[in-house]
Image (tube, rainbow, N blue to C red; front, side):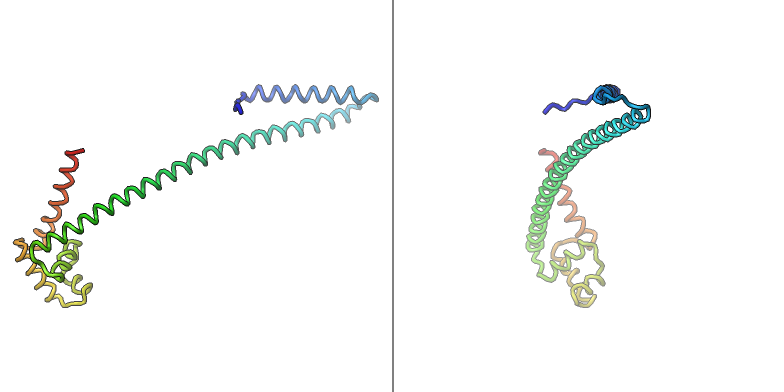
Length: 180
């Protein structure tokens, strides 16, 4: 089906022509003649029919346009959702890889499970007091486990531990950009 968009003046002229033709047919059909009042009422009736028809045509065209816009938006939404899922999966792979690398690093230092947990909570930015509350231990125990982790890793404290892992992340990111 060909979608032709006519200028409004062409549509209006066509409607006036149809109106004139209908009025001529009505006048010829009515052999008794028409009074001026009858003619005016017939003309108004035809005008209303034509205006309603034109309105319906405009409404149908508008609805088709909105339906096409809706389809485009739905296609874009499906595409964005699919891309979002792809990105989420990529992030999950990177996070899983980071978690494994961190676990292996703690293991290479000879950290106990408790020291590794404390180290991970330190990396999340928690204070010794917050870690003690989360793990259900005393703050002194957390301090002792953190100190053992620092000694085993050869790092002087929290900032160095954080820097150690962040440097690894940024180094991997920089290496990846060079290969892209």
